[in-house]
Image (cartoon, rainbow, N blue to C red):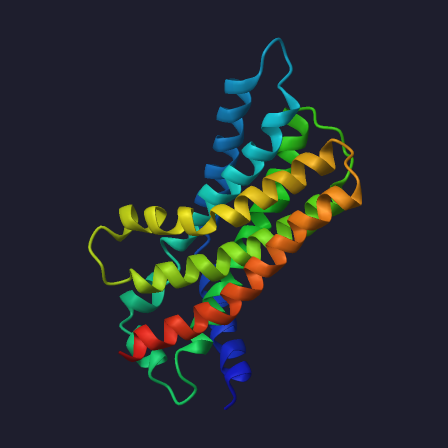
Length: 224
């Protein structure tokens, strides 16, 4: 069986498990809604909030919600004692990595579809430049999934991994988050394509580098 076929098999298995146990998605959605509400009441002054806080609220909420998913990404396989078996198949550990990364993207895409309208409504944001915002969100979710899956896998047998995961993940994702915030801010302010493209290019480069490096690092650590 090829690695692509094995990745698809593992992804279908993970999606079936996730569809039967909806608690993780429900908790993540509730957490994201609470984050938006807390930020909204914190920044609102006389019924309005400064436009410059909208990008930060959007991306921080997605980052925190994605971390909640990461903390449980490998739990089902680990609790079933199947993780080592999956890692040692003839196709290697890469299918496990990519299936978990795609699963994380699926979870976070659902969260983003809820969070973006909530932020637009609660902060009374103007619906301009949403195409560029959507592109940035796609790139951001892919980058967060790839880096996050790598960090979660490396820390899976480490004590206090719930504490260490954000400490390792957030600094690594800083360039991607900064670029995403800049794209969102420029887009909602009606910025030009020339102003947005450099930051989108940075996000593409970040994703490309980690999509090449992360599976290799994951394989080296799992095979060690």
